[in-house]
Image (cartoon, rainbow, N blue to C red; front, side, top):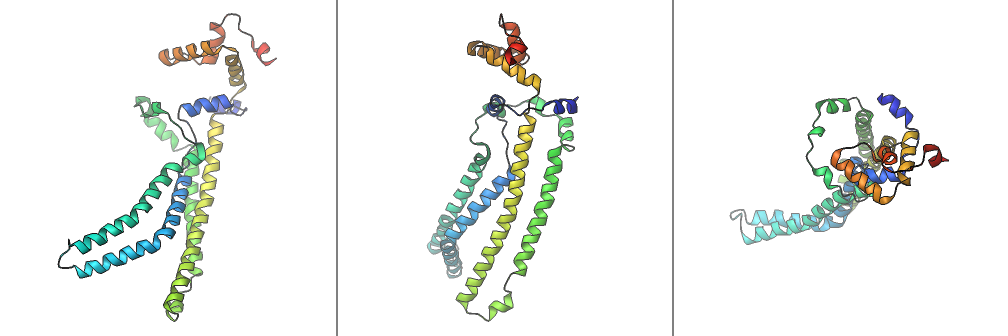
Length: 268
């Protein structure tokens, strides 16, 4: 029955159905996109804070040696405070990126009903059925692909390195410049690999979301009937449906409204 129902849903989801799903908190989410945005924000912030952070860490190390006999001296505590102030912007940008990244895919959604406790969600058979779902197999294949891409990126990074022996004969500034360029290429390769994984995950989540809300001809006709009902009656029927658990609004609209049009008149 489930396969027959899926095959009968040949029409794309209407804007009304997607809006109703959005109000219920049903929107596509991508954990890979969030991780990629957080990584980019972290790398960008580190590139900006690196001189300040290195100076603070160097000052902390020096003060730790100077005040070894007095671990809680004023000099040491000032150094610790400078490190904390240097790290604080990095922590803030990570928090902001983790909160803003989901908005890139589906925007802001406020659905307080999703926070209510519902015993129907605690279903062992539903959890077991997810092990054989398409999302489960896609997540497994995506994890394998991520490992392969990261391994390829790391191998390329190591193969393109200058080597420790090659840097030993250079001056300090030149060696640091080569090391910084090598690290930059490595981070760019890792970010590119994760960007490919995020793009695949976003495309899959959107396709599955639209497929889950696809409509059959019966749904299209029911939505056409609902469009013929006055807004006041629709609001009244929706309230009854939420309070008493009645069938869908589209099926009850024609019986509660005198003189409702037939299906042929709606689609004619």
